[in-house]
Length: 329
Ligand SMILES: [Zn+2]
Image (tube, rainbow, N blue to C red; front, side, top):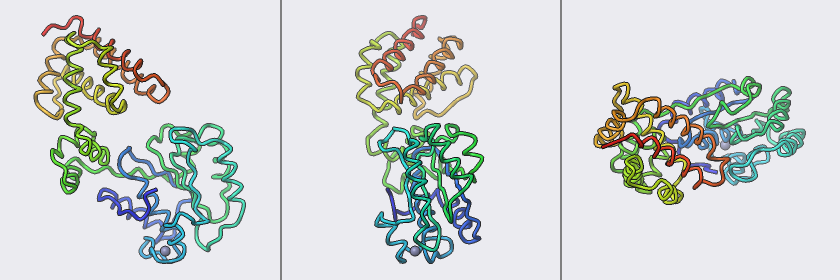
């Protein structure tokens, strides 16, 4: 939990929006807060929740002083319930929602709101979501629900329709590069592109020297296409790297090849990359590359289900080497 940490600059507009709910006493019974990953949206949600629980909020923000604020910051507020999977990556189950409804059958202890944070809301399985829906339809006394998600589409329409929706504003590329520079990051613009506009991911990439890794992965991927690197060996080497990032990168490069077919130029970290991707586009027919792209998207959906990551990478890279069969450079 990231309580009492300052909000990020790109959250100001949304913070104002949420404060207005409190100032105007138009607090939605259920708020669905959605954003792309890596924006620190949990901070925004917690600041809003603390302000809702605060006994003397000022201009819609928590006072940080009252007994309610103190309890919240100490993680012991009796009117705050955090519903999340028992283990990261697992589902929120119906038993968890039943426990929640039992708690909610009791009266709130403080005079203001009681708040339930559901995070990530898309991790509720179908039964849990159904049980929660009943709660949303007949909300308990002074209880507010905040649902946090990076994937609205994974939520049942019945839940979405019961919520006020707020999609968090993304920083534009310039704003984000400026913020990264203020954090002491070099090559900020390249990192923004690499992290596809996700601020905290860009920062993480900077800390882990991901630009170097990115360049080396691109070279290896290109070598597989040229038949100069064995796909199975590369799959083994790549299992040591974060698979989500790898898949994102391969998707990005493949999309660039597709775009090249349509004469669209996309900035991809360095112009040398673009030249090589354009050269691939000239050699490979669009049907083949679209077929590979489909395989990629399918695998992106499978990464959380497929336990054997090496096998997944092997399949992918073998397919990629097939793309290169008619390729001569
Ligand atoms: Zn307070």
